[in-house]
Amino acid sequence: MPVQVSGLTNVIGVAGGELTGYALRNDGTVWAWGQGAYGRLGNGGTADSSVPVQVSGLTDVIAVAGGDFNGYALRGDGTVRSWGYGSSGALGDGGPAFSEPVSATTPVQVSGLTDVIAIEAGQLTGYALRNDGTVRSWGHGYLGALGNGGTTDSYAPAQVSGLSNVTAIAGGFYNGYAVHR
Image 1 (cartoon, helix red, strand yellow):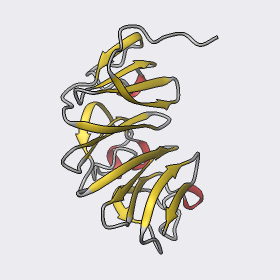
Image 2 (image 1 turned 90 degrees about the vertical axis):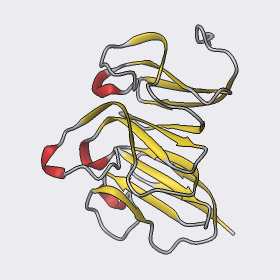
Image 3 (image 1 turned 135 degrees about the vertical axis):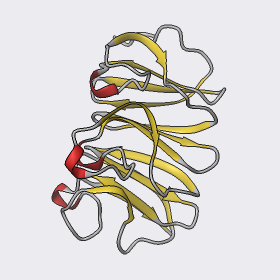
Image 4 (image 1 turned 90 degrees about the horizontal axis):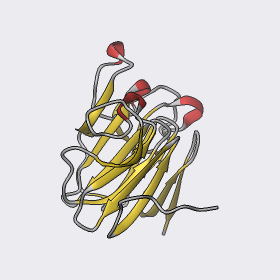
């Protein structure tokens, strides 16, 4: 039977990750609850929380997405923030592969993304739709999840091959989806 999440009001968006929930409030803040391992809650710690806690330092957020071990936030200025587990480049911050697994317990900026209008998440993978109709992806390249013709992980966003005029995106376990005109 469904239960109401305690303490949340004025929610305009939600997203789910593995064992973690995210809520976007109409004041542009993001709240998280559930398992805190790897910094999934984005509040500076790794403790679990059965009640929503505010994700640190996020303002002017217009959309949220939840991956298996990560949270993503799209800000009104078209940039993206990420937090949680950094394995395989899931943070998209351009961090070096040799230093993984890196966790970000508070949000970091996804490298080089501007003019983003929608975000989605997959298994250690992030996707961003830009206002020019192109899609960027980063993270775990397993089974071609990044759509760039390869299977190598990407630590910073790269353009998805062969897509233009995209109007919507979605993320799956090891795949991404796009609707184009």
